[in-house]
Amino acid sequence: MKAKITKELVESLSSDKITKKEYDRIVALITDKANEIWRFICEAAGIELDWWAFRNDMSYGHGNGSSGGEFDPETDKEFIEITGDRSYVDDCPFNEGFPTEYLWMENYRDVVVEEIEKAEKKAKEAKAKKKLTKAESAAKRKEIQDQIRTKLSKEELKHIQFKK
Image (cartoon, rainbow, N blue to C red; front, side):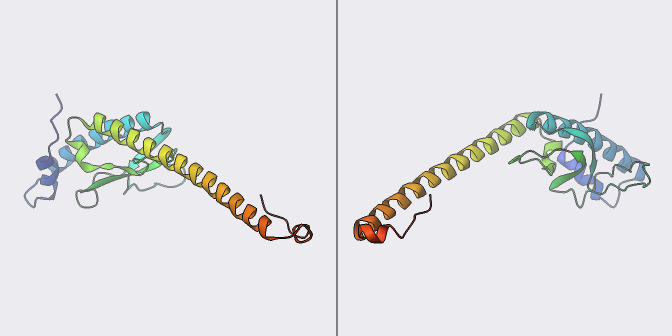
């Protein structure tokens, strides 16, 4: 059975007393968990994933792949940034990665789904508001044009044209 990842376990990577062997073991656990979480996020958000890596990934060049990077307790303390070959989904809160705390959260799946649903709802509301604003703007424009028409003579109206 895999060891459970806790906040304390992740924070232990920054300890001066940790051995190289223990550090590598914890980083391997984190990598497995990050893979599980990232693949779930991609599936839930509709992100098409070819491959992923941590932000410190190093290319070997000439088509020889890359290192894949590894969890860094300093740069990944709050947020695990993901690189790689994948699609991006408009308004998805996880296009760049995920909060580090998901590593030790029991219910990260529920949180991911909830965050995606919130983002989708917010995007729909913004789109509806923009549509309403356009309609309001068109109505205001027509109202102003009508006011102008009442103030001009028929001869003057022949020489002007309103934008649609």
